[in-house]
Amino acid sequence: MKHFKNMRNPVLPLPYHIPDSEAHMMPDGKLYIYGSFDDREDVYCSEKYHVVSTPDMENWTIHDVSFTGRQVPWFNNPDAPKYPGIDWTRPTPFIQKMLASARENGEDMKEKFEKESQGEKPALLFAPDCLERGGKYYLYFCMPDDSEGVAVSDRPEGPFAGPVQFPCGGIDPAVFIDDDGQAYYYWGQLFSHGVKLNDDMVSFDPKAVKHDLVTEEEHCFHEGSSLRKIGDTYYYVYADMERGKPTSLGYSTGKSPLGPFTYQGIIIDNDGCDPASWNNHGSIECVNGQWYVFYHRCSRGVQQHRRLCIEPITINPDGTIDEVKMTSQGVGEPFAPGEKLFGYQACGLKGTAYIGLDETFGEKLMNFSSGDEAVFRYVKNDRDWSKVAITCAGSGTIQVLLHGTPAGTIEVTGEPGKIQAVSAEISAPAGESELLLRAEESDGLEIMEIVLE
Image (cartoon, rainbow, N blue to C red; front, side, top):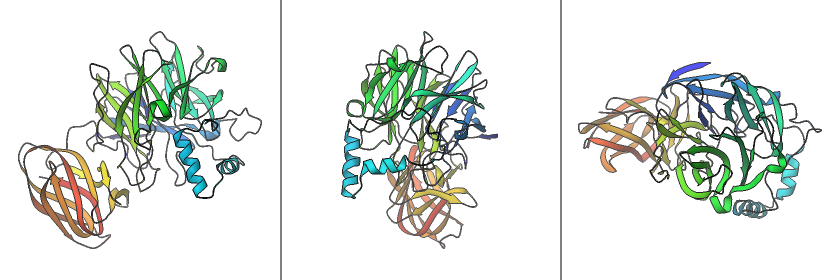
């Protein structure tokens, strides 16, 4: 168990990469976050879950392992029931692109998936969800063989035990309990499915499943179902393909937990968090009267190593949600004069730059090439800005922009890999603004810390 304080993005310290975040206020008054756990270089997720909790969005606890894939008795068991996931007989635009790309590369997708389905697989646990009923906590999970199930605990952080397999196949389960006490279960990729759960929370009638609640073609649905209710409106939140890849969290609304749903738009887009940014998955939740969106950003120049991030959002009087930008400040106030911004807190990257590892600082902004940009949102000062100091390595020229306007230039004359402190005068008016660093020239430029005065 690990305790720490933080109100900035990304929320969790290394090495806790917890994406696919489902956030729920539980009966003890704390917020609990359930997600998968990235700790592999080759694939998404891992064979374990960690639950994260907070009483106030500042003091956090990362709990011990709550559940492992090795606890699942049907996984890699040839005698266990098998249920298909994606319906490949219904080629959505996304599937058509996959098939076309494979043909161009001389690949047979059918043969490829048949090979991947053979032999033992690692017992990976993909995106989960969890809710409480009657003093018990029900953890819904899925695995790479398209199997889905539920495990139970007496505590919101687990450990969870006694896994039961569900009669369905796919990924990304979600659970929702309506005001009348009826529980619903959702899952799917490209086409979503939903069904009423029985009172025991661990079973449902497969004949009662309603299909195509949201779809790729009508609702830009990719995966990652998540349900909430605000007033008399049901919000179906998911990874959204509207911009060509599922880097967005979008939402559709309806007047029934099983639809029909109408597409509304995008809440947040993590495109630009990393050169390899590809997917998103998260949720919305109200904490002490404020609504937030919980999402992830990838790092290290790959699609994995995804980090938990949080932004406040606004539910408008008409029920719509305004799209928000990724920030470095997270749920806290803008960065103040003299406060350190760390390179790994960059919330927007352009070019080859990415967040990588550093022996001293844990993480840093690296591979910062000529023409690259790094954005930090937001900084605030009651007086004019006059100075910038950075801890960095390498050499080059960095232009500093505030309020979208050039404020000064930092000349760095060090050596690649050798850490040094450099400062420069800048000039920018007071107020809240976005800080943008642009590498005009670079030879191994890396940025660990930035301080504005």
